[in-house]
Image (cartoon, rainbow, N blue to C red):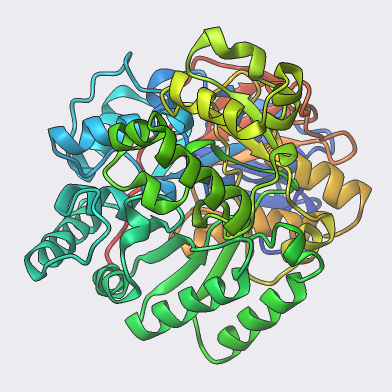
Length: 533
């Protein structure tokens, strides 16, 4: 063997009880698993004594925003140190392929708050396949799969207008989705509270989902509301994908805002009914109550029509800005999930302009009080001066909902980790050890074996990966060694970039990317592409 891991407590990803074994690795795959006392022990060129550490499959982040971070930051310890060995990119309907020159320029501006503007990156790709090729050519810290972003596809074929696509435009979108699937995408995402993807009616989305279904992919919507009307928005996605014959994966499946306190059981009953009727549904969540997005995402959709430059023009017009304020504060903008905005829940987590750093870590209400002005005045100034690049934490979640949803039979883990900003959400650095430490060991919400299954085999099954997600002979040696007694998220809201503890070793394709708690210089990650059904 190239490597033998001895005396490991194997938590194999099935959810079954753990057992002690030696695990031998050759040519990047698990070659032998020899349970304690079961015949001669495997030998290898190198031996690591796990000394009772847990050995599990690598964790799969089903909702990642590392589309540019993987290219910009070869270290990428934010994810590697958590034991993440595969991330799913292209989320929330907005990413960087497929594009033409115009679309690329527009999407870079639109999601600067998520990924930065990418000014230090050579955007030498335009198609999904070329983006995945770029990841492979450059070498990346962890593996990556990709979802075709429906908002970007609409931007490409239709533009930023709030209107129905013409038959020719719909044909072009179908073609772009088919090409992306053929080039290796695992499915399609939407951001239905983000422009321009939110302008698509269900009939348009269903046509694109039918294309995804032909390739055995899945649809991953950030649906139309997580606040007022959240349950109806979930039901809309269940019905849409049922009619299109497409698998459904619900992104960051939360029930937030005061109107949804204690309503997780209603969501789970809806999903159980659909599952029992034969639907193919899964979901992901992060183990925290606040959400994270951009400040501009809070605006009503009509204020975002036309793209970033049009938004800025409206904000700088006093009469239009007053209409925006009234819609947000009194009516409840669709960007804020139909709920009137509460400025004391909106904390600035990052800015693109370093000169605005004094706003970071304060709510809009706090900054307004310090200035002696109304919060909309503060928010409007920040949006304009930061050119829409500000990110926020939105403190609107409920712990009982978080715990109820993570126990569901189709639940998986997704960090939704935005790595930009001076004070990012700690989920970007802490989601997976938070599940293992706080929610399994400390609170007992799930057993350790169940927790590992949620983070490994379940997402691998959703991605249709035949050789990942389990500790099993013949499977890829994407593995994590962690200490069940000490594993914990180091990141906090005060120090969000702190790495976790209790995860000394992480391997991808049998190579150490984390060894003795430190990042190696190994770039073992590659694109993980959809395989033929």
